[in-house]
Length: 370
Image 1 (spheres, one colour):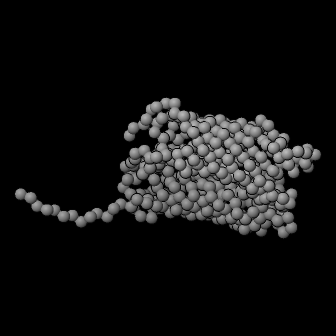
Image 2 (cartoon, helix red, strand yellow):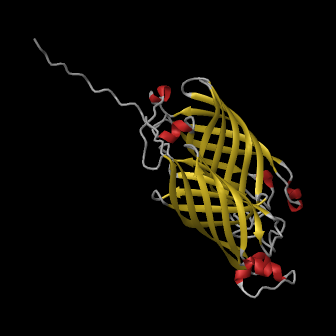
Image 3 (spheres, one colour):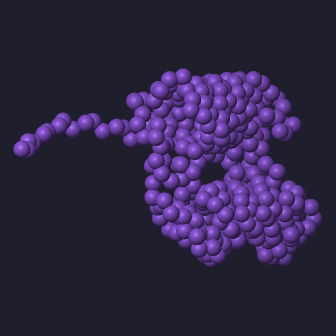
């Protein structure tokens, strides 16, 4: 005996897991230069975010304890100072759980995007604003926060961190704005979250993911930057940079290594001449540096940190040591695009863009199986 049974199709669970979050912040502008002391004040800021809760659809999500990925809009009146005006920021972010329980977690949130300042330095009309020389800037957010789930749909947050505006010396002056704030907020899912949020999943390996075979990579990269210094010197300059990093892949998340770089900053020639040091050719401006490197990897995207010291440089007015943050994106398995921020003890030297290429030499044939 047999019979046919028909069932109504069930409505598929949402795969978006979208949340909206509102934060109220209160803090102050860090006075890291004497010229900024006149702006000492306490003031509020506001942030609204649209975030996606991950559950392991891609392997890197599981390796990083299922972070939140979002887009954020930030605003502050900056204490009402007419010279500073108002600040706006729009940036993507990723919110990593550091310690995670069933209903609560301690997180670190990192975001980088674009900022807009309504006022900037002008040597005639706004000469007191030595912080920023441009309306358009890079905006960065670094926050530690505590998250407490009060229901399946709603989460409360509290945290403290830094919001930073800088144009990377593409237009001077560029002391930058550093805003320290504490925050409270509330987050809610826009619809009932995917059931996979509770059970989590671990998918198969994808093209750009680590399969367990440890290797050395030799990476060559270049960057080109532009520095508008007309307010100070009446001229604009280019910066040319080349980097070689030898990196060892030690885990899914990490590479460690060493780096060598050469930088040619055309503005150094004018700075040296003002100190009665003259050069015959631009090649004498080359700065040779050596550094230690660490790379944090998330699928195609990665963050490369270099901390180094100049071996050879005529101009060391900014100091002997430097730091560099490189945002890398793999176009293919060997070719990558990069955005480079070079700084001296927190003061930006330049922001550059370029391409790179890497060669891999596998030294441990151990493939990770699911």
